[in-house]
Amino acid sequence: MADRSAPIKIAPPPWTCHYEAYIGAFYVSAKSGLPRDVAYEPLEASSAEFTEAGVWKGGLVMIQLLRYMSTPVGPYDEMLLLPGDFDVPGHGSHTRITRIYVNQRDTTYNGRKNWNIPKHIARFEYTGDFSAPPFTVQLFPEDPAIETPFFTASLQHLGFWTPTFPFSSNFLKRLRLPNAMVQPPLPEGEPKDVLCGTKEWYKNTGTIHSPKAKLIWMDLKQPEKGADKAKENWWPGIKRWHLGVWLQDAQLDLGKPEVLKV
Image 1: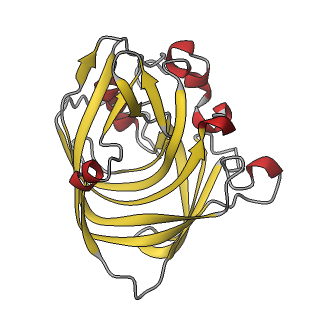
Image 2 (image 1 turned 90 degrees about the vertical axis):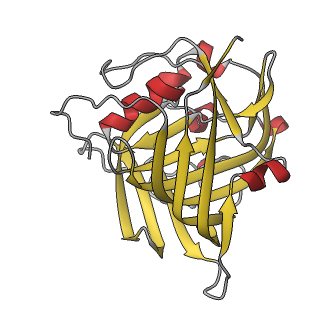
């Protein structure tokens, strides 16, 4: 869990990060509507500048679970949601991160400040080993008194026979999949020294490489206790199981963002 006593470490871009990740994906239609309580943390949901910044078009939704072993601010775990594409006035259609959680204060501040990434702090609890599926992860609010998770995912092998393959973000260009994110300005929250606000639009383009990727299953079945039937698989209306990819020994290089005039 995040250490509240230490001062925030300031780490401007560029960043080189070494990590392991599980990425689950599914398609949704714009006609289904964007579920705001799934797509946004309450702070960002309260900001019209963030939530009404471009028309949501649906498309490829990605849920990512990451463990960073080495970054400019140290190790941390992360869960993020890219809910498809948004029209950005004057700049075409781009994906964006609308909801993201980490378990460390320094990356929360720097992610928000450097790239408009709307990071918040959460508790990550695991059943099993992150690096050795099958395992389950549950996310809880930072308050240790809260015992009900707001997100649960389980990862399982597609099959032990499944081959590994190299993965690069250059593949995304060839497949015409998202390779850059355009992030609107962020509202300020409390504590202000962690949940900083921003004022400009940023376009972020990074490169990802993994010498060892493998197909996996992501199970989004949520706990039965107190579950909303419409959200039994977290995102309303989707199925339980989703094909994904497991990136091992991965590297992310993320530079200074491009400032956009919107």
